[in-house]
Image 1 (cartoon, rainbow, N blue to C red):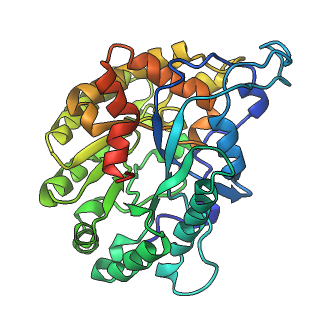
Image 2 (image 1 turned 180 degrees about the vertical axis):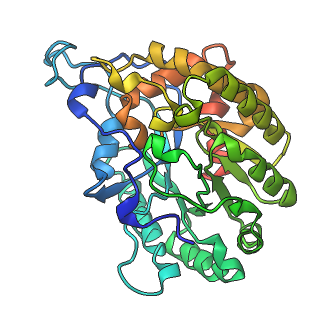
Length: 368
């Protein structure tokens, strides 16, 4: 079961308006703090637009307004100057650059080949110090069962030593058209015997699993994590507490249910969590509707309850901040997002910050 076709990937996401984003520029908080961004995409499709290495590097380098730029209210202004200290990134699959021919199950190997090529470009030093795509997470169809092993082996070879694991998206809800998602997946995928047969091939190959689902499905991940304690798992986007559709106006109720599952998942030693993705439409925040893009103070205020809950439950050694760019770029600028994360972590010790912003991601994805 493929997660989707490349042409159906992005209607759920907010449009990126660079002129709007450029109206908010901030000084970088703690500019020397090393950051590993463990979750971004690269893509070039009509329905998503182009976001490749140059666009990512532009976001990484963005910060305060240059002296020669127009004032902060001008839609034509731009941010300039040094950005956050992004030392490395991890590429996450997003149906990009699949092979155009060959066995269907092997076509996602093309995405790993593509990401590894970008990684080689970045590793040359020609484009700066950031090790872009230092780790690569691809997509393989676990519903193939044991036969997925040949796909995983092909990805290991294609990754040039950078391939770290797969993401197999199971996010599905009957009311998801309310947040624009066109992909309805079968219920209970992570309990399907064939999927679990495929999942069982990850640990022997030294591979990890990125999970993305909504808060209503977290019990499935809990069962999976307990059944496969030797497989490293990371839950993307704080576990997807929905804020639209039947959950609109019920944030406290959703938070309580989500919080209970987060605490249960945190008790599993093999489960980590990514702190981010909150700029996506399905979370129900309205920052994208403002005349000006949100400040890092505004973002931190809205996101703090989710981030602090996750850090309290998992601890800094099992939690990592993520950008989820360019998906979250519909809500805020890259440098503003990382400022917001730094504001939420202001009360953490230097050791805890080192883990949350770089150490945990480096260890989980074995970046060295």
